[in-house]
Image 1 (tube, rainbow, N blue to C red):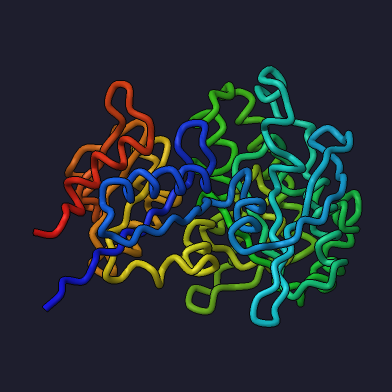
Image 2: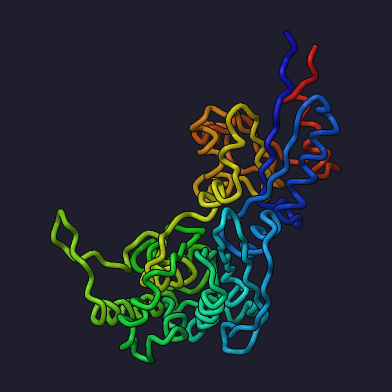
Amino acid sequence: MAQRSPRVVVVADGFGELGPHEAAEQAAAGWSATATHATVEAHASHDGGAGFAEAVARTLGGTIHPLVVPGPTGGEVPAGIAVVERDGTRTAYLDTAQACGRHLMDTESLRDPGGMTSAGVGALLAAARSTGVDRIVVGVGPLACHDGGLGLLQALGAGEDLERLPEVRREWAGANLVLATTTEATLLGFNGASALLTEDFGVAPAVTQRLEGELGRLSDRVNQVVPPVKELLTGLPRRPEREVGSGAGGGVGYALQLLGARTVPGARLLLDELGLRERLPGSLLVLVTTAYDGATVHDGVVAETAKAALDTATPTVVLAAEVAVGRREGMALGVSGSYEPRAGEDLPATAARVARTWTPPPR
């Protein structure tokens, strides 16, 4: 009986300076060069942060609609709406980093994001809805702004003091919004948006404490104009500022949730949007990333894809520019092996070397 050729599914979110598509293609090419008997597939994925819309559009064949929107300090910046049509449904994918990304500001300005606005995200949302799409997916990762989404809501007509927020919520109730987030952080609290600025970006504690106070006052105002609904079991108010993902993008996630957005980790969403989940059973999964570390095993493409593979008993290995995770941590995620380049190796050469171990030629 003839032996079935192995199928290798390469999923990449980048590798050093390589973007997701380039990393997937180079790793797949290197693997194929050694395992000529295997069927090797290259797939790019993303966590919802900067580059989200472009990555999805490139994979699904979307059309980019260019526009300009306000940046973090009000000046115009270029952006684009990726519109994809599948099965009769038109979806707009938005990359909030185009409007408010940290790359738009200098390092010194990012030490205190107070005063920066998310108004550009509101402009992106309004423009996307004007195209008549059936659904809007908004990718939100770390941003320069930290205004709790106030600028976004004001840009949509909520008013200077959010006095029209109830009306704006009604206007957006049927918009079918999805928040594709890179973090489950809440708006407020010890693991909230402001606290993470110190942990992730080294912002001074005095600054983050001030920002926490500003976000607290914003949430008080929101709860005043839109009284929270009560939990059925406890009878206590359900506080939107404590919702998972509300702290994404300095509170842009909070504003989107106020508009009715469904929240899901971006990498988990793309498992289904890009058809990756269905490719896993019966395959060897090769995850390609820049850093395989303590953050990677909890959030993002590596974590979400490995968990999906674990559900179907799909063996998984990781190729990373830097490996900082021990075997025990990897095994808990279902990762059987992790590899980084040896001296003088590029990504294709690393993939070719690992392929000899995991897909040896048939005897």
